[in-house]
Picture 1: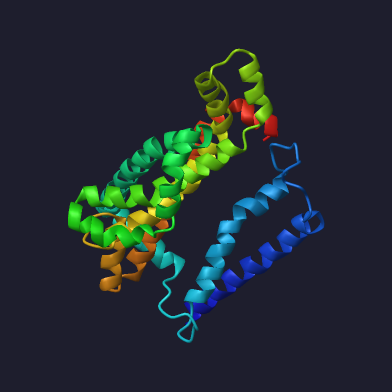
Picture 2 (picture 1 turned 135 degrees about the vertical axis):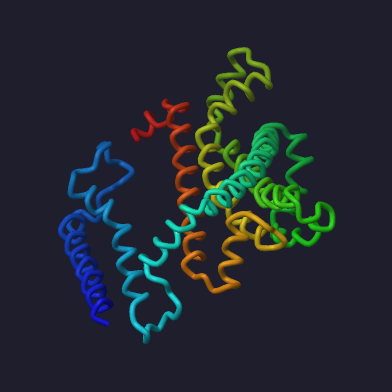
Length: 295
């Protein structure tokens, strides 16, 4: 009991200290405009608030997990989850399951990107492609991908092709529509300049519309990458014998809550890393866009 009381005091002290720090640093500048600031580096006190925010979350989590009379039952402490995470990592099980899940997301996401981005660009540019693709895409986009799971199992079984198909169907229709919307926002002045400069319609497409759309297409892919992990879990919870979704389902079945939370956090870690990689690729290949935004 003393140990739990000490933990409670530590967690409560950090939450109170962070609240005071947040008010001192941010309180008087809470209306600072992020979009118009030209500073690329935060002052040290702002950075301190930024980097300590995960510890605030862990402290709140720790408080909720302490005490038998907690209104939220069966919450493992952050220390228990960290212990489970380290044990799974040391045994190699977590790395193996995470690698399997990552490969499934990579294949499904890549297929949806290869199909969705060109179709979105063509549908937004050319009338004939728009008439052929948009009506069907608008219809299929409103069908939840999980509704296809039973049908996909009939055709693909519960092998890898089924999991790729779930991710693909979950993403491709949204990617097409979002890319089409980006093309709709292309400044008509650029198109008119291209046409008056002697460009053919295909030249305008490849040299004006595609380059103009690429920065926001990267943003679309980053958003849909997170959705890919959502559909992966749905696929792995049914009939899978490997992967992070299977690890989570097995942990829930045998009430290994520490392993369950560790599996969930692994999704977040992998997602954050892949998101940062996409962001870095975007900044590296599209420097002009970020210079224009002054970011």
